[in-house]
Amino acid sequence: MPGGLSTDLYELTMAAGYHAAGATARASFELFVRELPATRGYLVAAGLEQAITYLETWRYTPDEIAYLRTVPGLQGADSTFFDDYLRRLRFTGDVWAVPEGTPVFAGEPILRVTAPLPEAQLVETALLATILFQTAVASKAARVREAAGERPVMEFGGRRAHGTQAAMYAARAACLAGCRATSNVDAGYRFGVTVSGTMAHSWVMAHACELTAFSRYLAVHGPRSVLLIDTYDSIEAARLIVGAGLRPGGVRLDSGDLVGLSRSVRGVLDAGGLADTQILVSGDLDEHKVAALVSSGAPIDGFGVGTALSTSSDAPALSGVYKLVEIDRDGTMTPVMKLGAGKRTCPGVKQLWRVYGPVGPVRDVVGLAGEAAPTDGEPLLTCVVRGGVRQQPTRAIDQIRDACRTAVARLPEGVRRHRDAATYPVALSAALERLAANVASELAARDTGR
Image (cartoon, rainbow, N blue to C red):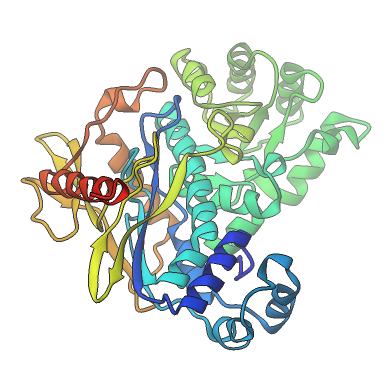
């Protein structure tokens, strides 16, 4: 997990300034995505478990503090900032968040931190990186899973991820949002997700005979083995398997005309008495290609999806921000907002409600945390950390996956479309709109000297 140095320098320079000024009043920050990517009708929240673990273990070690003393940008900081404040620093705040696997939309608070101002400031970078990356991957995985229907999807993207840590967390996010398994063994070990895999082309090429490669693999790994059959000629490889009396659990196609090849291979396998041998396909797949394969009626039993998942290739970054919304001034929690063009924020700590109709969600309402819920509205933000202590047990990935699948399926069909998705309605409550107008007026009056 990241540590205290997993931050931007300006977070530390501000913390040193707060320390020097004695500015340790409680403050609230909210993390949200400004705009959905053009290719998304919704996002799936993910990464909360790692965010909580980060806050639980967040601290500065003696070696890290010694390094910070040498950073030019911190040369003006008082020695007590290093020797006393950073040495003792732990996260003591509260966190409210939407559960992992929940569909969310632009402008909605995904996570809120209330803590002494320097604490809330210093954790910004790590929280953004943790939540936004996994949310991007989970959102992509939910789309791929929907495209596959009832056929399983395996995440195969570790080798294309941006480092091994990213590969592990991408696998987690993909599995909580719908993938049945991952090829990433580290994710299986750390998160209890199912690991799955076949063989590489190099295994076949390392043997002088393709049939020997298949036979040896089956001898070691048994009848559940999945054999990769497109190294040379996929149809001929299927014939070799049948002719030798081999009975693999499945075969995988990784290239070529997947529709035509799967039909031909299915014919060979069925004629040879291998009707139970599944056909899995991979090779630069995404939700659009998976949907096309499914709609073609090709006899494909499952999909391995790599790069498109581990990098969220069509939307690799989200416009997520972490903004101050309230601060204690002279004993009163005071709402604050930003007025910058195109980046205006809403003041005050908030709750997010999902309003349901007869068949599912019809709109979301962002309102003030203390106001009454709208009719048929379900609050989505719950307290997950209080006083620095975790409030909820860790949820199993399969539990999150089931809840995610149900929640996504209940969204309006137009919002779930893979192309030209409809916009899901998100409104501000009347109370929040009034507060925003009042705070904006007060700021304008202050700035003009009136």
